[in-house]
Image (cartoon, rainbow, N blue to C red; front, top):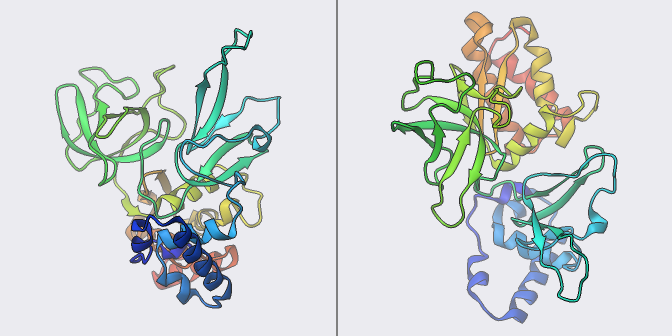
Length: 338
């Protein structure tokens, strides 16, 4: 179903029609077609706007399961755990709510709102709430995101980095690395890669995005391995796949079907352990860096094999069982002893 993104949308004409009743009628027709569809060919033929109208027609829009930007998340849908603070994930933000003039309370109230359209996701175990956006959406920089950036050029104080084709260059301070001074700062060239965190995002179109490779509070690189990425290869995936990979890599390894339905990284790690394993860095901007430098003569073949596994898993939306079969098949085709 999610593979429909990237195809030509027949919904463009619908979006231009301002007749609300006609949109509802067409939405209902799309919903009937979707319910009667028995093959994946139907989903390949529709576009993202069509999918939006299908969700609109078959879902009660008063339900907070699907949220639009700036909509408030009702408190009853938030994790009720009081032992730990609530963590806000991608797609949500905390805003101050103006106090009514009749209120005598001196404390300011707050609300949590959505910053992008998508499905509301609440993780009770980790006490987090986030918005699951459509997998094929373009990347929009958000505070605290981990991204893989490419150096475009440098100035006396900053590296100017590319994080996505749709956004302006992000700024990475030349001293925004662990232990960096004017003498010891990394000498990065155009084309080099860095694993960084989004430090701040400006307001308005064309606003500057600032990156950092250290924790501002401690001045140390975080355990995630922030800093220059040397060697390896970079593969492009959708932003949805990138989010799933990040969730899978940080989840409990004991889950049989993996977090977010992904076991590909766990299976690759087990199969490639005999040649030294591999390193991986995933950016929310849809970039995956893979390095198998410990693999000796099989390093390049192993790196390419990992990239193929990620691509085919996303393109065919494979189940955990099919992912394990895919790993075995691709390693066999690339003649890697596992």
